[in-house]
Image (spheres, rainbow, N blue to C red):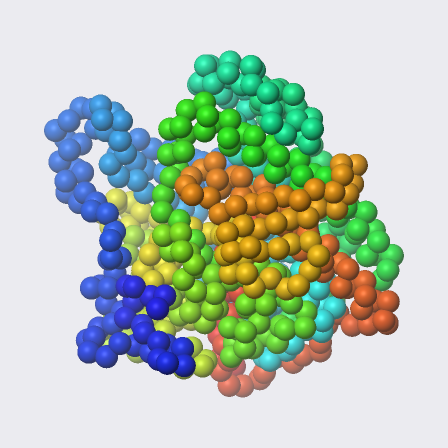
Length: 543
């Protein structure tokens, strides 16, 4: 059974149902996860702030690496060197859910792409998939393959950007030198274990080239993001607002010439993926050896979620009823990891376990006494919470900031009432453990690892192996993201080869015609993902 907090059980056929005898199954009594650590109350925090001069508010606002719309509020004990309370704030009302009410559903493809300059394409595709499900439109195989390649190319922009433009400078000599001079001195004396792959003789040389704006790795990452974008626009027209993503596939015209132009750019990631994995292996192990306490930086329980991505072109049928089956045939397996253990790979279970809460957000509650729950079940009869996204009504209510009450424009999504992590690493973990990968010559899931066979480029062919880590922390998140670059490259290569086979057989169809229903009510959900992880769009058509 995958649920511990929600009162959902499964019968002998695996069908979920609400446990009997629970008066209010989705009420506040189920809101506190079992085993959650005790937290200080707001009143106790306020009392400590007044009584102790060494306990102070510490705010980080804005956090500029995410465009400045994020802030953190903390209460820190400077004597005990502990954080007593921490809250994150989204400081900007974006309003996409409000903007789309009453519009033609096809508008969502273009409106949602404005949500992010790094991951706009994934929002467009997720909206298109939600519409496909709602109207019953199945893309042709080539359309699925091209959609997968487009997603991979988007990630091949995103991962280098994160690793060497956003996160990388934290590990550079420019940052480590002033803050941990002894670590940098050690780095200058330490040989880099994978010098034959990435070309840096010592760890100090490697850290020098992570320096922002001037370091070779920083500048190389800028170049590789351009390479990925050049390949992406060949099939999607432009970025960050792609023009060829439609319900039922892609409106691109695909030819052997386009595919070959794309391959010349994709092939550049064969060697780059090898370098990224080697660099982040060396960085991670160096910092662990320099001070084992680094293993505790960002350490937490491995509670991970991912809806899976990269549909198999012969399995995807765009139906909710079939989602459990076609989801498990994806190149990246959907799944939930709780305390390091994979508990489900079923997209239906993922979906019914999701809830959104606005207790501390600048929105009105949409549930309450006298209000009818719109959808008590999903389209196949599985129970849904009143707080499920299909039941959500977005009601903005701006007001003054209060740490006890409301302080953010974000909502609080939960799965089984647990806070979950989403990221590239979640899809690696699920795929490695589930062992449900389609048969292919490049990627193997072993149950504890993923083996990645990267073809020869300027560097010789190389097999990488990402292993499920024994500790879960900031370093392992970045290491996994580096390996995910190789994983993504090989998924793209597999789909490119399959697309070439179809083109050589004369199959050039990339989309299926469709009509938007004029009456009735339909539901759809797009299960997809960004470079940064889990992404779903829930859609209701009412006329």
